[in-house]
Image (spheres, one colour):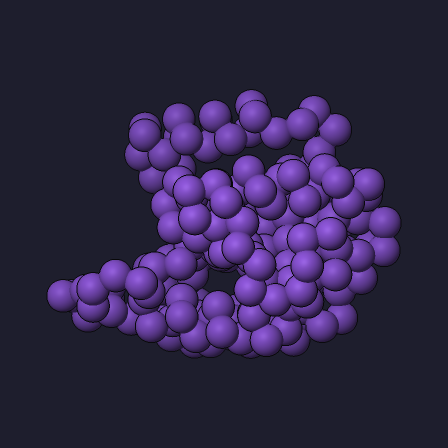
Length: 178
């Protein structure tokens, strides 16, 4: 089953996704998309690493998510991706010497939606819901909110389970919790 876990900042979505992975009884591969651009983010990443169960494999990949998913997916595995909005931000703001950002963004997004239906096992995708607030002032911020909304809609159509977390409480939007 593929699951999409949405929520605001500090809503409990990552903890919930980790519980899903633990209860899947499968080998877990944690795919982190964060980049350590400053000391505060390095500390956050270190805290997340330390909190993960010892037996979980971890892969850090800020841009090439589809290729990692394709390589790591197996029937007996649960892939936990945290988080898609960081991945989206990485793509929208990346500088690529061999291509422009728009081409890279379009290619990686298309690759994700090409590979997802083919993945065996359980896939848990975590993402921040950023579209419930006011429309941002800046062009890049508006683009980010728009692209996140489009990404979530397409993922929700694909996934068998969609859960929205509010104050640590899961609200099932599609599928069931079990």
